[in-house]
Image (cartoon, rainbow, N blue to C red; front, side, top):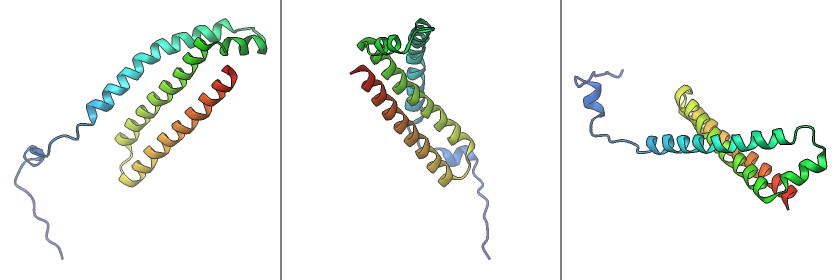
Length: 129
């Protein structure tokens, strides 16, 4: 039999001196910067898609192959997936209780976002070049 002893110290006293992980602010800052970047990128993409409404395939191909448009599409993909993976990581950290499952889920999200980003960017570059 094991005997459990209760501590007389408060939770604050137990936490004092442990320090911070110093990763929360960095994660928060990256999420805000990517959100601000997405405002401009989404605006450009909405303009681009609306300008292609009713256009044929060749016209769309010519527009997307323009270096400025291709660069914005690549940035939209990269920043959008980065922002999404940061947000999903926060959700997983907050709502998945099991540490092992949480770690696997976060790694799966990051891996999926990376694979989707690489394949999407390669597709845009294939059209643009």
